[in-house]
Image (cartoon, rainbow, N blue to C red):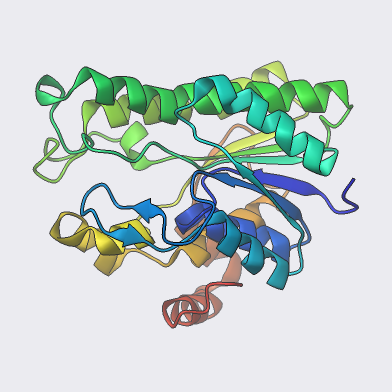
Length: 285
């Protein structure tokens, strides 16, 4: 069993999940990192067909450079029969889990397609990946912390999106997002506030990362060019989430905008210095 608190981060091969894992390692956690991409070079951006950088192996190396132990568990959020089994594999590796970060989402064609033009398969996959899988994983985590008496120290962080709360100015395909994406994110971000009704001593909250220039965003061309240009590097969100987990003033069941939160915590000068460092490529801290 790990002597440090253990955090399970889903979708940790790249992007926000990778950054959160590294930041938590720096702040004193060991990590279980899950995702589909075990080896570098085997992931493809569905929007472009290009190979994407990032893998569980690479994230594990970065976690260990940051001072944590990394346990890799290959898991696919679309394989609903394996979601709770993947949690059991995580427990077998670590002996216990204290923090669950639901970060993974379904990435596939259809997010910029109007509902009337979308396929039933996309609807099913998006609901499975964005809502059903995190519900099943959260259920497994809750059963674990209740059975082991960890409820007073347990934390659930759900990485959500504006799409679950806000109506876009334009429809999907013309600058907005799809009905299915909005509906799944709206359902997803109700998990945290309802969990604390059932388990008041467990910490659970939503984090809206805002615009983030992830590897997939940077590779996606004109469709996500505005996000690529104005988004922050993933490491900024990693730092924000690690800070929130250690911050007892975060409202239980609440909804936190990561970038304004971190700017307020650090102050303008330190936040701008962090941004400059992150944009220069220092994304392992």
